[in-house]
Length: 304
Image (cartoon, rainbow, N blue to C red; front, side, top):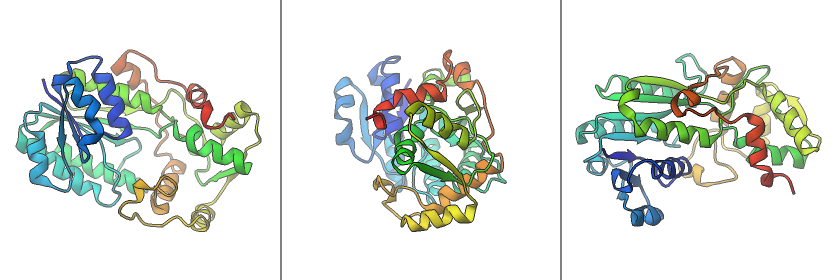
């Protein structure tokens, strides 16, 4: 069996790879990246590290040859990734790959206002019509984002605001997303044509989550319930570009366009993310971490 992981040098790709190295021989892993030198340690262990670029279809097909199952980690190029993902699916089929596991997003119904959700839905449609076996992992909002990025900002300013209203989400630890992905890849035939909702164990409003953060940190964080127009004004005042620009994801201070973030908040408010499952436990045999546990894991991000 040969498992191919795209985006293997990214954070999620590294987590999945590390877990698989505990379950299968390194020689069964083919790791794709635009920067092979960043995976020298994995190559030393015996993994086959190959250069691959989703914008280079012939090169991608060559890189996929010999693989049985592809872990297709969604790219971050908003506006371009449907084309990139479709290119990867076609290349996988041409290379002889038989099964594709895709990291999608929960709440991706075709009616969603979320730009990201629409792109994930289009990719799911392309994958389901490809003739390949597939497994779709619809990951919820990463719970880690709150204690790592949003909570420190809320503590520093004493307030934070969203336009999600009373919409709910079941935030999931990125480690649990990686565990679910590794679990599927290690026994992919058992998950043929399955669609899983990879979520945390409990639904919350954003106000609920930041009330918990304020209590745990013992720092006042006033939650502001904003309109979409007010949230757009906040993004504009911060100098955040409304549309995606190439290279934006490499900027740690301005990684997402406001159109993407605002439509994501719209989708939460309208109930598209109000999904809670036990699929992490179904796949891995271990319950997903709670939001409170994820907050505690990242205390160093805000507890100084």
